[in-house]
Image (cartoon, rainbow, N blue to C red; front, side):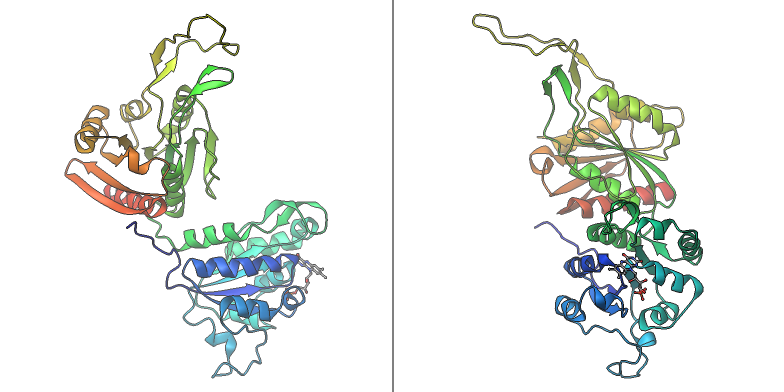
Length: 401
Ligand SMILES: Cc1cc2nc3c(=O)[nH]c(=O)nc-3n(C[C@H](O)[C@H](O)[C@H](O)COP(=O)(O)O)c2cc1C
């Protein structure tokens, strides 16, 4: 059975709602937080109640919703103190311009603002407002003040706004808030390290409409990019064609062929302290792809292609005069131990991660065998994000020693 770890298991989150159109999205967020293991306690401003009811939030969380500092349901009658004690974080989603202004000047004239001022846990806020409100010097001043005060701002982003305008100030989506919160709680094992990864398959053209590729989904590489970002690294992901969404905070460079992947890696690798080659790179390409679609014709011979070898990205990076810490991946169908150890030696990398292609490729969970000069250890079976976090911990431990 693959091990599945709920990202927010045991975490107690105060979810604050303020008066903005995006308040309806917090209903979905409340569900998602709980699906990931968190206990959610909702606190709403009076304006938030104009947009979504406390009943909805109570029904979704299974906990009474607090809206007033004069609420006598809290035994001490001091909801502004009691609610935040024991909380792992306060998450204000959406955060109105007005509420940000209150936070910036330390106002405490309702339950949520008083709770934020009296807290002894981290505060994360997701601004949501019209573009003029967000761009106003006062709001920008307040946002900078909040950052300086250690408040974590999640977004905002740009896009369509409820008022019909398009611009900056749109709240990030609930799943993005969730991803940011999960990342916030991960240990910062690679703080400020620069990590370069490759992921996905490559695609070698035969003609303008056909090509050679492989079954790699990119899931393991993308999970590692996310885990490295969660661990505090600055991450660049050179990706072959996949349908996956880029993890938040990760800089993705899209490529198609092995040569393009090689060029993109070589252009950025000098800045990297860690290189993780997860991509399933084509070993060969067709020497001269046809400029036109190859047609079949009655009686015409089947095409014959001449192959040339692609550059070896991992071996080239490992052979640099001052190489980053290099981690290679090997997906093999048989003799995994022997093949992976041989690959580690020929490519001269300190860490080689092996998995069985038939189990791993395209799957959501897998098992990784990590080979180094001391031998082998097994990670998993687990879902790929859990495996990625474990592997990042292995890498961080080796770098620090
Ligand atoms: C229909 C409507 C939509 C609003 N949407 C937003 C919004 O998206 N963001 C925002 O900052 N303010 C918005 N406001 C204004 C806030 O609701 C108002 O500033 C309120 O005082 C905020 O109170 P609070 O910060 O205590 O929740 C909106 C007001 C109305 C009437």
